[in-house]
Figure 1: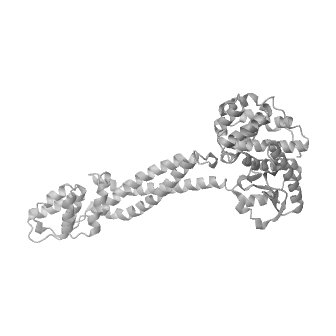
Figure 2: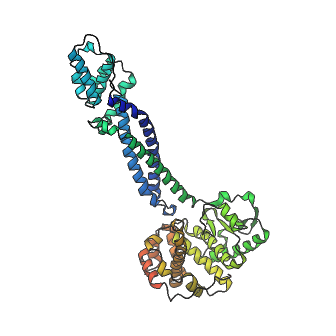
Figure 3: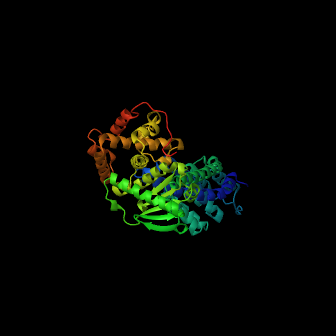
Length: 480
């Protein structure tokens, strides 16, 4: 007698083994994704993990649901197995045979509560070991644990079978969708559940890849700027990594001047950086820089690693010599800001101050009227394309679409420019010191600018001041 229910169980065993394994592995992956992003995102917006919290939570919930039902289905298959067919013992009456066949049919249909009563009609000596096993499994499934153990023992069940349902019953594994009269229909859904498990696994892989790609853009480039591939020379406060001596000499003189400018503006002593403390990596071309920093965005002209006091920059075309000076002072400004205020998640302030220092240095050296040039070229039209301030104040430019990156830098520069030029250098330096101590931008603003108690007030003041006059036609960048 071929039993449809038993065949369904046998046909699903291999799928359930693979399914449970996939889901167990994915459960750990989803948990790691969720708890790591949930823990890091609120404290480290600069890592850009905020977007990943919701999808990782959804994956964890869905995977937990699928894992629970796959475990219950696997437990059902493992405990119940199949109704053991055995030869009918001699001496059974036709009524006994009918009872035995009825018990098998009830088992097939998932009506386990009927099995013990049907088998009870048979004389005990009429049951072979296989029948006792079926009886024991049926008793286990309807919660009659002690009777189940006795029946399984009479059937010669091993220790593994006897112990299988005991702890899992305590966890509720014998309750739920695989232990009701709809179990056959539910078993038919196991292939669909396997497809869901595969989809969850692929989604976890895709989410992990997206997170890693985001974090790679924050990785310091030091590993790819191997010092052994450069000539090295210590000159003043600089340790210079270079290929071309002429470029080295030009850059060293410029970097020392830019460092003096940035330190002086921030009220820091010239010996803030000792001999050879600042590492200056000079690439001969943009191509070399891109090869050494492949994960950094294409719009990035240079980068700084403040905690290592390192600046990475490449040679610019001669026509862009003023912009090269701006960029050099900008990157060194990051190092100075780090020494003054420490690490900061407020990129608008970090980048805005670095831009202020860079353009102040470069335009002054070029003899260009700074305010007029900035209003005509850098701030013109900013108000019409400015980023929403709730986004601007908490984002990192690496996380923005490339079309918005320039706006972010311009907006950050304009906010810092407003604070310095309209409220004075000393209140701004007080703001930096307060912020460096408490890392609370609202408290630092309130302590330094009486009319700007918080970020919201700063946004309102900015909206009144920019643009200060009708945008003029853009002119060429100095030195271009």
